[in-house]
Length: 435
Image 1 (cartoon, rainbow, N blue to C red):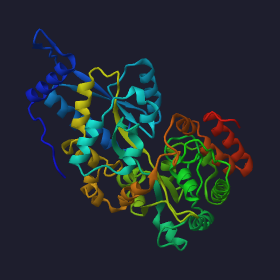
Image 2: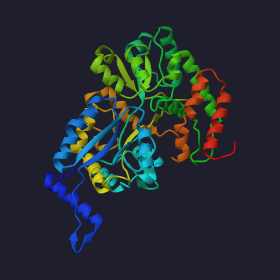
Image 3: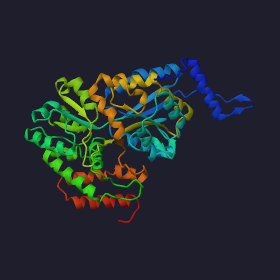
Image 4: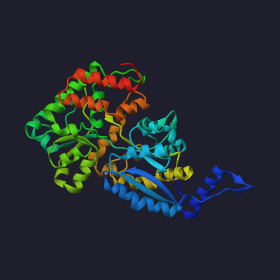
């Protein structure tokens, strides 16, 4: 991949930032209104499940940026699951961070509070092999890039190869029906499945939405207005999920969060779950005997003959309330150069699947071939709410767990028609339509 020449000397970088600032401020009596780059920029980030990832930024990238520019990057970490609360507070108050991490569809939610970074996105795309289409689905709002895509936290099937082999499976089942059959056999052997159905943010969406889509069901049509929760396709998906849950899965999954299935898998309570690469990563570090018998693979196909995956994107935005927007953009441009990206991606192996084709054959993929399905899944990944265009109502449906709760209630024993009727009414209300 092509490497862009970086401004190596500290003085050159500072000169660049002073010129950028001067351009923004104009001149006074013919003299450039130059000012020094900010001494500190705040980079708000979610804590990573991969410890080495945050450590790499703190110990390698932040000191490097300080040395090159004289600007300190305050890498402020939030505990898992609390990032959106922090981002919302910053949006409300107008201060608190310069560059922010996004999940899911936040660039659409906070469109007016995020700076247009199309210039950076186009520059990076040209230099590094182009962007996956999935990246654009996550960040392009009304034709403008409101965030720079970073990587996808893929949600795929993690399973015990040895236990599946014991019940007659030399490879992972290709369809949901076949996985149900395998799950019944494994459950009878004392090796149940464990799929989250609580109010987490990744592992619940990671299997429910792909299952639903593979049955041909979704909540809103591609026109963005026609609510279709109450459909034959949805009824079949809900009925299957109930059977699947009741015959294969631990009952307490109804209250699980995103850490629960990791713990259950690594304590050998479950034989299969839908998760990011973190299970294998932690197993290799702490439980090598489990790592040796762990497989990772794409989600099963449904009755439509198609398989789907969730798009769980990480992206970075510049806040309109940043201390210095030009400096914040320059930091983001610097961060997306191969000199920085290659090492940061590698520190997490391939946990954050890059959205740039320039990394399709990066060493971190071949270092652990079991992770390759996470790269392959990008071609069939979508945001929750697909195929409807991303919108505020769509985001509210996700934030209120309307679809997750519909399936969870059914898995707990509720009637299919009743849970669909309730969810249909909720979605219509959110979209401002009569019930």
